[in-house]
Image (cartoon, one colour):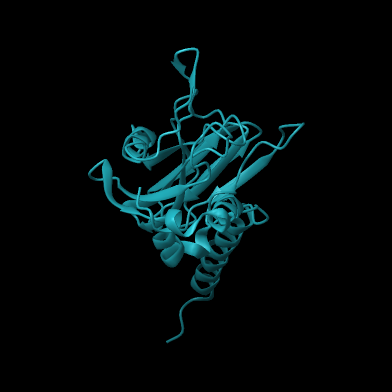
Length: 244
């Protein structure tokens, strides 16, 4: 017995609506974004100079969550609902790149006011109604890195050295981010351009492993952005093998 024609039409209409909605969601994801300077798996969302004007939709892997970038500010939507985020944190620095975790429940931002130094990384967790920053990520990595690789420079009795650049490189899984710490490429820094890696655990809120430049290159070379690729090319063999 054939179903009534009106039921067939209704089912066909619902299928068309689902397909159209899916296609529409795809079309609202920015597809022409450049990769980050630190990580090829991150996306460059730096406000373009001199206008600072941009309008981007950086979709998570599940296509349900998206970071909206409007000029120099960002926000997050999940299933079309905007989540609360601290207004100060939502201000983009001149150099910024972002990468979603594979489970779409977190993302990181690597940002800096200057090109050579000052990079910090923050991990953000998606909650039901708000965005929760994971506090102290840059501080933890900096503390571990500076045990052996600190940029110190004394001027008139004061240390005017620079803190390391801290950047995201790749998600090894949904709860672990491989992060980079780099001695800033500034003449006053001994060992400038040296970098090492750390596996940061969101659950433990600390690092659980460290990697030499060679270990990073062997495992995650495909993730190296131009900044790291250039550093890697200029390291000595001894620096390549040095674990931070």
